[in-house]
Amino acid sequence: MNGVFLHVRQGFERDAAEELIGKIENLSVTPTKKIHAEENTGYVLATLTSTPDAESRRNLNFKSLIFARQLLWVVSSLELPSSGDRVTPLLDQIISKAVPASNANAFSSLSLETPDTDQAKELSRFCRSLERPLENALNKARLLPKGKGAAHLPRVHILMLSSTQALIAISDVENSSAWPMGIPRLKFPSEAPSRSTLKLEEAFHVFLGREGMESALRPEMTAVDLGACPGGWTYQFVKRNIKTIAIDNGEISENLMNTGLVTHLKEDAFRFRPHQQIDWLVCDVVEQPSRISNLISSWLVSGQCRFAIFNLKLPMKRRYEEVYNCLKILEDTCTSRGLRLTLQAKQLYHDRKEVTVFAASRLIS
Image 1 (cartoon, rainbow, N blue to C red):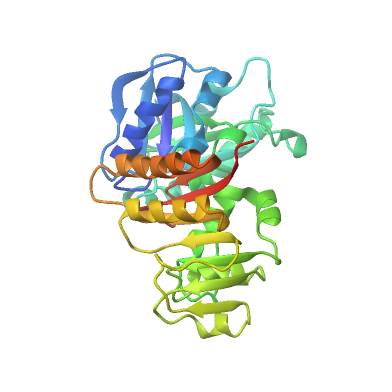
Image 2 (image 1 turned 30 degrees about the horizontal axis):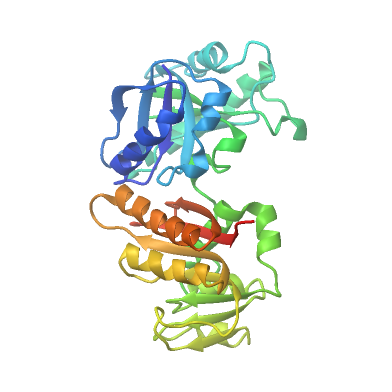
């Protein structure tokens, strides 16, 4: 079996499948007519007619996939016995289907996973019971080298769809999420005023990465948070000592105000403009996606912000088309004003029926 497996949020399988069908045309292989995108399963599986090489896999860029939490390449499927030894058949399939013939030291890590659904979570204990024995077997076969020199190697994934149905897949380190199943392990800070703070923290990790966060989130910077109250997103700037203007008619967290880093203005988020350029614009306002896109575009083309992160609240139907149209608004507006736009969109783990977008613009030289 050769296929593409995407971890996705429950209920967004068809959106992810629609997007994947369009993107996969860039590959040198084509999917069969069979694409599994059953609602509420938490994954999409496209079966391919041949094995894609490394270059073909790179053409399907994980960062360009909006609805995918994780991108994996399936190399085998197998039925496991309902009891007894499961490690041996898994190891045999990994060696025969996933290990490059020229490289015994094949993988940087092992991950046993299930789709992110309540039903599949019942398999988590089963996966944990298998992980250590299988890891030991891979180590004995010298397939899991240790040390920094192994960090670039692909990862091997065992996807348990049931207690007996398994898929074996690999992920390319540079073209996938670093988190198993694409789910970040972020801890909610007790001093934050709302759990929405995790949305922006995850966005920083996904769009900027560790090195990017160090350079793009510095204490001397400034930020504007549209629709700020009670201050979950503002908190992410305050904890980095970044002065922030919070725009909202509601009440901001008293603890945030006491830091001396926050200016709270009870103004209309669609009318407010700063007196000088700020570094960061963030927005989690509940409004039509196209209206939010036009708002952010106006900030970018006027040079009033350098970077923007914002959420698009999605309609019930045609969600992929809606996101595509919103991104096109941003691209066309900036291009028409002589700006080159860096743009990335992702439905994050902490998002619900929304997509988070990162945008940055600069003059075309």
